Length: 320
Image (cartoon, rainbow, N blue to C red; front, top):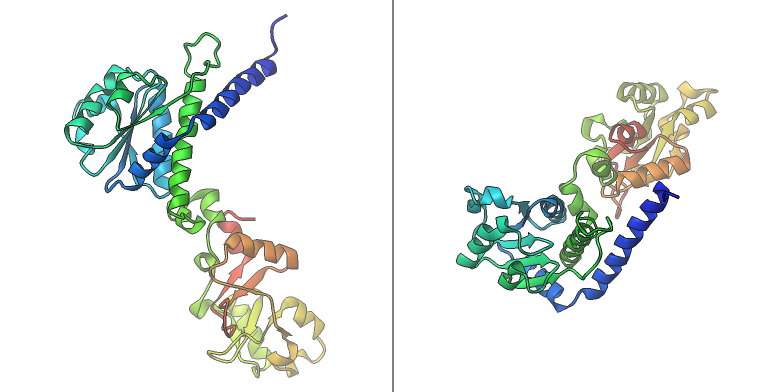
């Protein structure tokens, strides 16, 4: 009976998972030396590879670049036709080839040797031309390709990709690369939104709805309506946030409302958030408290109103 498709999928994943375990066990001082070379690069990490190794190399270069290690991919065939000028002293080359004998790599390898550019080679054979020429040789352990006949790059490319991730994360952790650093390279999309800070989305300056505690409620209502957030903060000019007035406060004080002051109607000691908190954290606070906006105040010292974050700002940014 023909093997089911799901069974084939499980077999492929099992073969590759076993190879990754072997790869993890094989890491040694050569891996440490590779990381040191990359850390000490004064220029960029130049990643190169042909065919499927090239596709993996592009991803490795992108991962390095997005985690604090300047990197770019150079196609070996294009390198032989002028792009070798992208590889300069101060760079470190990371060259990938499962066989270690890919002919298209010859020029870029020779270029690194000619100009004293450190070379980290990744291949499946320790005695291959690439690894013999490399300053640091990272050898992929023997493992069968998941295709079963050894001709389709599957397990080998998975190991190479994982090795690239291991290098990138080792560099990232050594540099103490933070989520805030990460966002600098990921300002767009869902990821950028998740890493946005409150200060990136808040309204401040003249947009803030604020009145003094002694403000008559008719004037407080005008300010609340004019700014359009459905809330007004109560604070003396330059002073701390004493309280807020929301639609709920208005309903609770309907009788004689227009004869009161803002201090009579406000809810004292409102929930606030710091400007350096993640916007995602602010959304969680608003959901938990069942409110639609938060005043932003310093995390330490007097709670002077710095801004206002509305749930709609977060939704527009892709959070929610």
